[in-house]
Length: 402
Image (tube, rainbow, N blue to C red; front, side, top):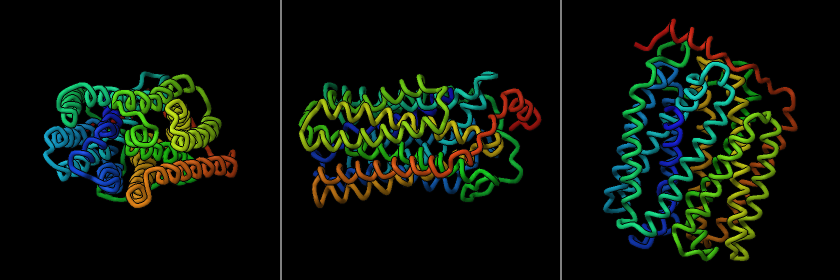
């Protein structure tokens, strides 16, 4: 069920991807406004992570996920009934609250609720769950947008129903905290345990590089496919963008035994290649090059995320995992929001093509920084074993939530 909550975070993120162009046409919106609708989401996520990043270490994974799912449910409803663009901003902001509350706890719960001896697979399962959320949002959203009635509303009613089911199922998860938080919770910036800085730095830049792909794939991807590549069919465009998620999901399973450093190195290389192909597809208006770009970017995303998450999961103790994972996501979503706002303004003022080229350049630069950090930190990144499920179970028995 924790995997289902992970699915919801990415389904919620990708849900409007195929409708941004429809909103722009119906309400005469600029690229600045459409990317602003996208950007308000990671900005709110960052705010929630700063204030509430480690709350699940105190009140429990289940309780925190229920609060987050409740917020996401409200956000999906606002999108489903939105009569104007202000409702979209409100819905996106509330979705940001939901994802900010669930991103860290659901990832931590993937480790702590795993069967004995299977905790090390948590990063792989998380990556696959994210990919499923992407694929479902893009394929279903594209199909409903192109062929079903109410193209700007129906897909969000589907998302609303999914989140409602997840909320009901999450209610029956075990009632406990993630570890033994040593003090009463209060809002604060997530902090790092001593000695974790090298692993955290490398994991954060890898996950940040992976997440920044979302600007070009989710915020601008549908408009790029339609306006620059020349594909007018929303379902075809959704299928093209879903290659990003499909390849990332497959790699998340196939590469689960790959060690963190080579995974991140290969992911950074694949990401840079994918961005080069994306720029080429825009210059040549080539759908097949665009397909190759999204697929290669999915490979890069998956390996960067998988490597970074495996590294940090193995380096942090159970009782600090929720807060540290939230700190990792904080940097990733902050980058997502800033880049989205900047590229939206550039697309409005100077054209969508230039915005895509600059976005590809930013992601390539982040990929090179990741490679440089891997080379600089080398073996100084310490990755102790993940605490066993048996040890976790003993801690949870000693300190129940209720």
